[in-house]
Length: 128
DNA sequence: TCCTTGACTCAGA
DNA sequence: CTCTGAGCCAAGG
Image (cartoon, rainbow, N blue to C red; front, top):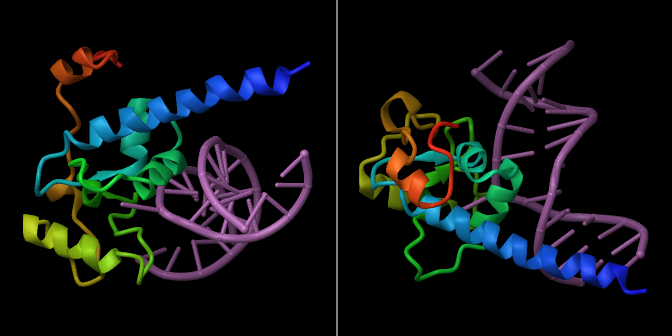
């Protein structure tokens, strides 16, 4: 039997769609604001880890503001030498302020999330 | 197919 | 406040 095959193929396309949903949501984050991986994950319905994986796989040139997604501690999660400085530059240019320890003040820069209208149009439950 | 490696988080010390 | 360990899950070798 090819049970393995029929089980993995659909799963693959579902993953691809999940990534698209993540990118669509990230595109809603306005300049000067930041969201956490967990925040994104909570909305699209996946783990924070997967949200991070999706960011790592973000295709260039598709308008996905990947730089606006940081970790729950308010810091850039990218490891030094892998583009962390670039992310810092981009956020800096948008007006996001970092404290001396390299952390963002969520009270000031955290994205409140997409509006109910967007949620509704994209198949989410605005009430949840 | 097994094993390793992460752009994560949370709870506990 | 910082540091660990465990739970997580997908991709690539």
